[in-house]
Amino acid sequence: MDLCALCSRQSRGFGFCLHLRFDRYPDHRFCSQACLKAGTRLARRSNGMIDKSPMERQAIRDARQPLAEALGELGLLAAFQDRSAGEIDRLIEACIDGFQASMRAQADAGVAPF
Image (cartoon, rainbow, N blue to C red; front, side, top):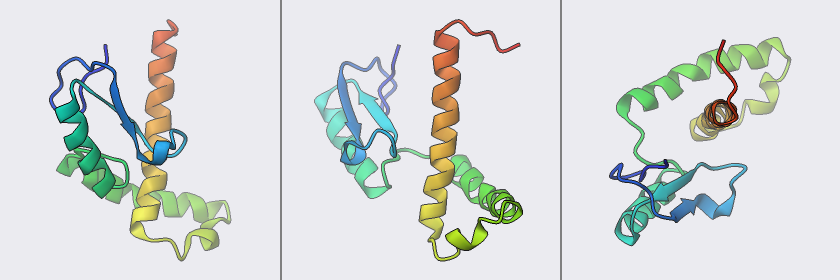
């Protein structure tokens, strides 16, 4: 059961994805037009994301250094030198979103985690 991204009630077919770019931004489900309108405003202000907790924001910032280290080890760091912190955070969020989506899909398909 999908929950509303704002109020956590059951979603009812209302959805939003920034620029309709499902490959790049998270999609959000809502229970009503009122939650859809409010959630859309939030997502547009925060690059497609809504309602990140302070802990989530800090975790994304904390992930920048390990990402930079991995890029350096792979010889890819130069390609990211001129990117903003927001752009780097978007890469991190995309990895997190992809990981979570895969875990949910595997669980839905009956794959056991052991």
